[in-house]
Image (cartoon, rainbow, N blue to C red; front, top):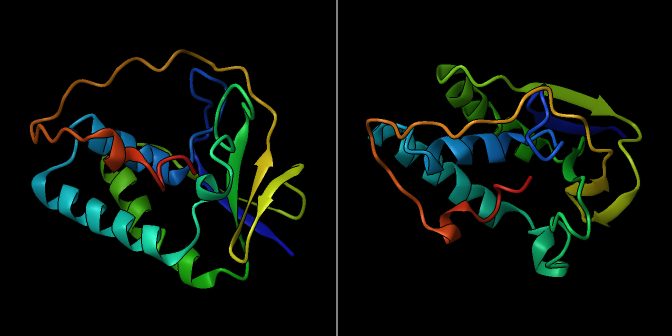
Length: 155
């Protein structure tokens, strides 16, 4: 079986390569999205939230940096219906010049969680090349609550 992950090519200030959902959620949280982009992002996140399990529901510490500092999720290659729907996220990121790369691996690391569609692995932390400065608030000014940033942000 192969596993697929979409992530930032550079590590965050914590040494983790943020996944596609976290990258898009950061744009929304920072108010960088237009009203139309925000609606699209919200609808995409809502769809994913209904489409597959949240690993945090089974183990609330799965993405806790104190317990699993490098935990990241990978799609199983059999989850084609989920992988196909990543494309709009990639377009959104590209429109805001946020780099995102696709990785494919048969062994991405020790498995911490597994379900029908995904695994969460203990990835090695990378040394950040530079700290991530806060992004200025965009013209849309959309601010989110903490619940808006839950799933799929952590993936």
